[in-house]
Image (cartoon, rainbow, N blue to C red; front, side, top):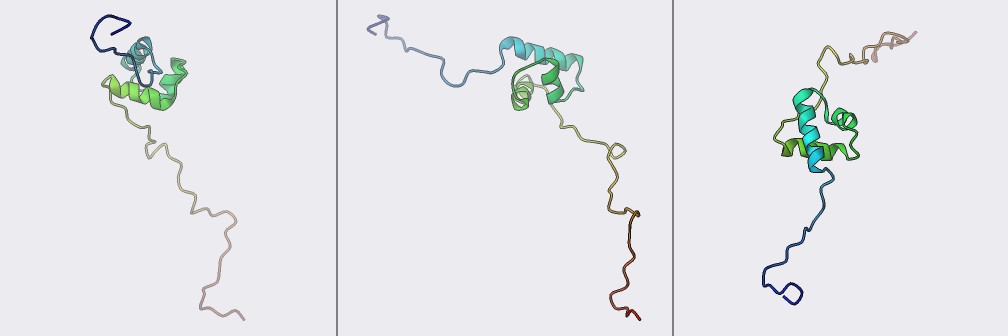
Length: 99
């Protein structure tokens, strides 16, 4: 009351400041509308943002978009290597005696 001569509450902007500006959020929104198949990481690189992937993910959710983690289809995955035939040595049966 002394400095402002009013009894109104003084409000200051407390807490962490957003790493993304309003313009950054608009750029993310525009990029999603143009290229919806980008991953979070690709979007961050395309827009040259100096924030983490998690920050971009939170911005995507805040903008109301849905994101999906990238997963490989069965045809794109590498087959398991447990059945390799190269260099395989035949072992005798455990109950079999060698003469």
